[in-house]
Amino acid sequence: MSINLIILAAGQGSRMNSDRPKVLHEIAGAPLLVHAMKSGAALEPARTVIVSGVGADAVEAAALAHDPSVLTARQSEQNGTGHAVLCAREAMQGATGDAIVLYGDTPFITPETLAAMQAARTYSDVVVLGFDVHDPTVRYGRLVTTGDALDKIVEFKDATEAERAIPLCNSGVICAEASTLFSLLDDVGNDNASGEYYLTDIVGIARTRGLTASVVKCDEAETLGINTKAELAGAEAQFQTRARAAAQADGVTLIAPETVFFAHDTVIGRDSIVEQNVVFAPGVSIESDVRIRAFSHLEGCHVSRGGIVGPYARLRPGTELAEDARIGNFVEVKNATIAEGAKVNHLSYIGDAELGARTNVGAGTITCNYDGFFKHRTVVGEDAFIGSNTMLVAPVTVGDNALTASGSVITEDVPADALALARGKQTNKAGLAKRLKDKLRAAKAALKKDQ
Ligand code: UD1
Ligand code: MG
Image (cartoon, rainbow, N blue to C red; front, side):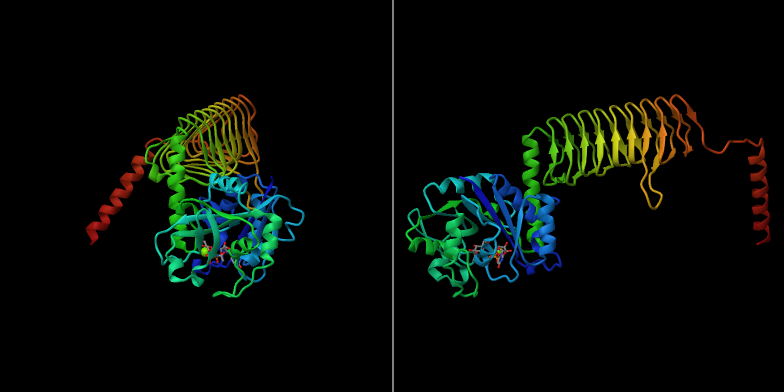
């Protein structure tokens, strides 16, 4: 049985107090919407439809950037969750099998939970994801059941006191055969406390049609929806706690786990060590036996086995470190390939560059890659030695085994095996320092006498 996803992401999210649509606020470097899409993608859906409304252009762009195969639908007025799902009808035309509705602001639903819902469809026409909250004042919809059967969902606003006392709440995630879902929605009205078309009404309607409905349960933490900046920060903290535990379970050593921050897609191999205060932005993959030393920031890069990075290193997008490469303190690398065993250990900027195997780059070296209009490449061969404080003015190539003298400004290609010297020639004036100092000392003494 194939499955399709409908992700509701049209709401305003006014409590975020932001110009940005709610679902585009980020956890672990990815929009809430992308987290929801990633949860749903575990089901390998035949089709995914994103329903957007507020900030639709930006929401669609973010969805398509993550997965160009998704379909988009618009809900121009937010008339409720039921109305939002109906807006996906055209995009779902011809889709077969089930449809599962997710919320774009609910990032943590696990693949296991979605699989359990899919499994429950074998004995139930409509499956709703619920969770227990023992607090009659929380404003979730309540699931009214008789034994295992789900009779209806009552929205908090419309619920009686007795219904509000029911601990079983609605997460919002609902699964049914796609054609059944839309047929049920055709009968949903808006005669309720909010004047909205509630998706939740399909359960009661299904039951009056003689269809079956049931509940799959999960933890409240999984269905956490984000409504405020404070909740966003809380969700980030939850994500980080889980990511740290997952890395440790995968065999990564975290010396101070609470100080390491992961992105939604960080991959780290077994027996790698991450020291204190390291931040992984999106797009980082690290092989086994790597050491990321304290206070480093990595984004969009790959570090091969045996590499050592930091302390205080910054790896920016497009950085590729081959095996046993070393990037030391206060070194920034961007869009550069550092071959096996090459070292850039101190105070350097290496951008738009290629460094050959075993090449050593001295302290303070900079690839001058940008002329204010265009970026240019620097290519350094194997076993080269770049003297400290070399300016490599790109485009420029330094051959295998070549050497540049410290303080050189290299503007022309250096052939293999050559020594490039490109700095002012030194001259020593014998005794001049002493004579100059004596003169200045005397002048200062004369000035003091006059005062
Ligand atoms: C909804 C459920 C409630 C459940 C709760 C869980 C309904 C009627 N109620 O209530 O039973 O306990 O979620 O969090 O479904 N959206 C649209 N278009 C709309 C309205 C909403 O796209 O016209 C989207 C929102 O962007 C959001 C999601 O649907 O992602 C839920 O909407 P929200 O307004 O938060 O519903 P609740 O009132 O919380
Ligand atoms: Mg809500």
